[in-house]
Image (cartoon, rainbow, N blue to C red; front, side, top):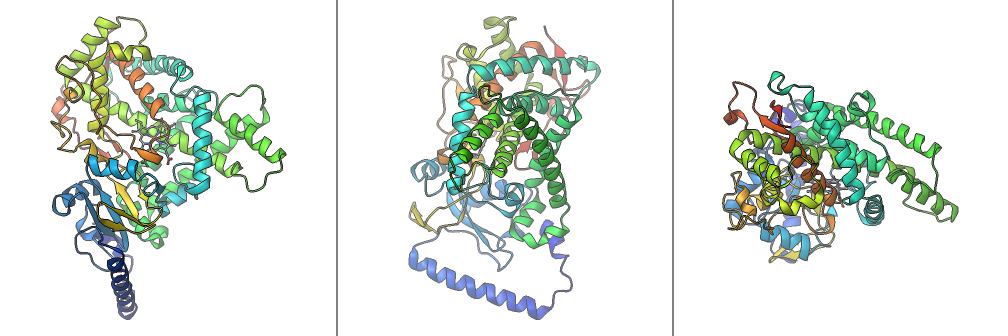
Length: 507
Ligand code: HEM
């Protein structure tokens, strides 16, 4: 449908021009096919049309489902054409792991699509490559660790934030006011990365903060829409697309907010008292400038983009996963019973801490199973080959877009007993002890593996156990759990479909 809508923008294109264009495309395809045949066998894939490629047969709203379907015919490595752009899709645990880990360099570049370029212009971490990416990623990882990411420092911040979130949940008075969990959960989670990045949290009543979080989340949703997928293929559609306008507007406003925050921190900077990541960056930038080094990556644009990346990546993902967890508890009350029985028996009424994870194998299994089934980044972020590579007998050219399809790993029928069900037993042995599973890679793997994995895992454990300790999550009175659907709403992340829950105080 989206393709047809897009084509409606060209009713007046002269036939001859179109004919010439198609001929040109056909010739260039024939010549590239000839070249590739010389270089080696390309991955198989469905036949494609010039210009449109396979667009007419893909479900652009849920491309990951189309890719899983195609793999039934073409195997675990196949190629499709999104318009004129060739994309190699990797399917299933063994293939994805092999590519990302054993061919880490070859498959380790990011494909910076036009939509992502709008967001970052090649700066920051998520949508950058080469030396810029290396320097920013290395600096962020080591400084975030120094600032306590995934360690004691962030544990204290998370525990503090949980109290604010509970106060928010209490305002809905149990079954009296069923509520949408999106905003309070996102604000709480966002405050964790904010306090690591800026050195302070924000009130949920501060409109500058809440609007920034809401805009960032809207951009994650819109960036994964069918129309932005079309924009990535045919960037000249930009001026006609409302989605692009929304993204640009949100981006400009959020950028202005980040600039204000950074300026405030710069004015009060004390090199002997680092409050957060921004301070670390500013101090490093100053020392690079003083040393007279030219062409440094530590400039204002990289600071803005890296901060923006951490803020978005650290909010939407973890918030979405937590919301899936609460929804699944309301949908499957017998599983919620077992989680609460375990927490009551082993933790009682005291605040859960990270150390408790070992004592709570069932709860831990439920959190892992939530991440597996929720499958929040089904397509993964797009990768790109850094050089020509022959992988599993197929030749893939340098600069080819590669989709290491995470949904096909998290739901791989060769790895999971019940791939499409919520089955915490996937992570339990016969004695009820927690077991790790190799195919559990919601954070991806290899060079581009999620930079915030340790922080996200800590947040999920502490938020989930503390909330389940204090509340019983149910559907609103009169609404059955069957009405909570598992399909989700697609953006770059897969969100639970709109729903309301009741949080009934247990303690
Ligand atoms: C449940 C929570 C999370 C999930 C499921 C998740 C998942 C992912 C995935 C799948 C990728 C792409 C990996 C690839 O390209 O192969 C990624 C990248 C990234 N994530 Fe996360 N993430 C989560 C939380 C976080 C948090 C809390 C942070 C903040 C510190 C973060 C920061 C990043 C960054 C900076 C990248 C880009 C890495 C790069 O391109 O080198 N993520 N994440």
